[in-house]
Length: 257
Ligand SMILES: [Zn+2]
Image (cartoon, rainbow, N blue to C red):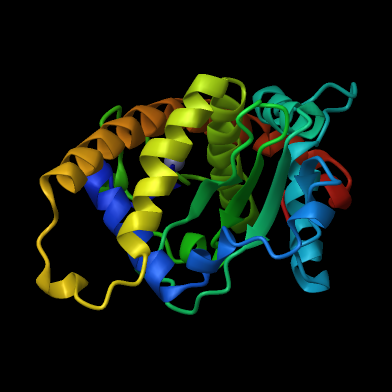
């Protein structure tokens, strides 16, 4: 679910998630105060972005939808993921994390905020941590098992696009399948809520056997989901690197920036 920087093990990913959640405002995100109003919208929704963030989002969008000289999409996989979410009927909000504690935080995340048991309209959020992406180490030590080095050869904005692609891949994979979305809700979101719920004596209380079982099921699911998203991310990275020389020749509004 969470795209960690230089971390591959699911438990480490989760640890990072928890650090982010405790440090940031994520624990509040599932409490949708204005859910009925928000639920009127569907697709990829930018209403939670400030004007300044919206400007950065437009730059990301321009890269995603860049065409070549013959008006053919330069990033078909990425564009398909975006367009699927837009037409899905689900509401996927975009947020840019404002946590100042960026160095230990994740690059992005996809979270279901409100699960619809009928599967008609889930409410979810994709969060991007731009500062964390800016600070990411890029080199052989951050290579994945396949040898792929995330962000390699990419500009600052292209790296944001790569992370967005990873999170969109999660969104499509999870939201296309009600059973899978239900598992994410039950095994990941609920488990995380249980872990983060305020319990004064939590520090002194060891995890119950039931909670330990929950955690291992959740981590196995996270690992599966991560594998799928990382495969898609590699495809997206290839599209971005292949299109780079073409985009650099295009008018400035479509160039790498
Ligand atoms: Zn992920």
